[in-house]
Image: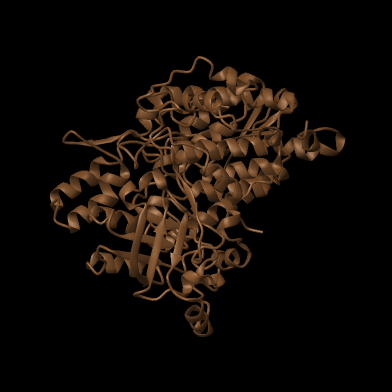
Length: 551
């Protein structure tokens, strides 16, 4: 065992003494040492229930014959960090968390890991860490929160809070109703209720084979989740015994499976960043070209909130990820069978899976033959940009509008709140990319305000920042190159005409090269941060088309 490096032989007497100080018995010194990387936090709703799950995982590890050690890693709630400087730290926290896990696991020579995660950047961070370390690992995502409800109106965090602000500012609801919605929207522990980034990444982790069946969709407060946590603890010891490692599971085929499932479900646009970053960490040849190729092949067979009213609880009842896997394995030749942490073939696991075809359509009767996500190219984004097609009304697949340019999210929010953005405008928010932000902030606040004010089909938004999985409307993000790297988005001026064509996968600025060359002569990069973690991050982060990974 790897842990023999810290516990075997006369020279390791001091090491054993220190381990005994933690409570490890002589008997358990012979067992596999299993780390539980827990992202428990009182600050993050998706993580507040993890103390209970830690106990279940511990019980499972000891039942399976291992010795467990819990250690903590950071967690950021994107919802709480949204709309201010705190959001600059969200994406950078992904690489910080991966570094923390790698450091602890290697410093203490752990034999295996159970990675307890839930929210947006923590799950991809744990996948990245697992692939870097390449020691037996299982991810336990803590699960979605219960649906909110007020006066027989079903609520989610997006509809009951972010979009409610727009309704209040537009006079659709009064302040009393706004406060009722605020109190009822997030009724329990768990990740927010729709197929936003946290739940998208949980589903894709299950598709990859790095978590147990139903882990992604079983509610955070359910007994099913507790049982999954226990079984994950038992199973990690078996993975150590059989030396089944993450890079036996995370391969080019399974990463492409994750892309296919993401397109079929219409997941968060942030998944592009995280899958590309994982591919880089695992040294697997998967790039934006794979997304582009597959986006023309895959039909959308699932529509969940924010693209419909069905939340994760409804998806779970309809069969969850297992039902999607069964459908894709049966009907999509590009989707490959594989073996994950269960040590069984996916095809065997899902053979008798229940599928509610009202929620998870058969592949020959999809919601649309278009995928849930798409890559747009053009003179604004020659290296690619991302749109959540599933969250765009089909009447808006071709949109032509006039630019209103803002150099940060706050300026755009101020304009929206003061009714300075009108139908026919294309809101341009720049210097919010990985380097320019730095940190590539999410634009959920302005996109939600646009929808809440009734402009969701009349106004577009483009940015070198990114979006929450809860964003809907004509919203294009991840524009590469970003403004800070001299991208054309940094040269757009108020009044320029911008065309978005989803059918042609294009994003074009109707300004001549000659005019753009003149503007470039006057352009100089904007620097937002000069010290601290974000300044270090800005110096080393790669662009969004390479996953915004550090290094």
